[in-house]
Amino acid sequence: MKDCMEIINTRSSIRKYTAEPLPCETVRELVEAGLKAPTAANRQELHFTVVGKDDPVQAEIQKDLNPDAAGNFYYSAPITIYISGDEAFGWSAVDAGIAVENIHLAAAAMGLGSVILGCMKKVLNGEKKAEYAEKLGFPEGYGYQVAIAVGYPDTTKDQHTFDYEKNVTIL
Image: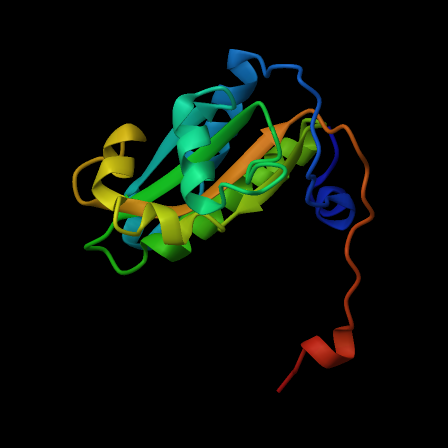
């Protein structure tokens, strides 16, 4: 397995996947990577919902998101992991961000591709929020925070570049 810095230095967001399904053990390892993420005050208030690409809720979200899109928001990845958080706890969004990055890096370490998804926020937290929360199995009082699509990559992509001098201030 690659070391952490090698993964960080070589990972990228993948937006094209093979049709090969992920083994159950692999899915479990990915979810556990999210569960092992630190949370504010060790609340561990996040909930993870794994949805297969053929689940009807994926098509319904796509329809509400953009019915005319040529593709779909999850790039036909075998699974999408939705992370919901306790809406009464002010740190759920931050905690979900940490958890989704753990999953993203774990996927890269396992030779998988992934892309972090936020585009459904307006739909999942909109007028059908309660309906989607029920369909996605969110606990009572929880709301959508972020999601990640994961699968075997069917493309390669260079890591993005950055301008250290522009993006960093050291006081």
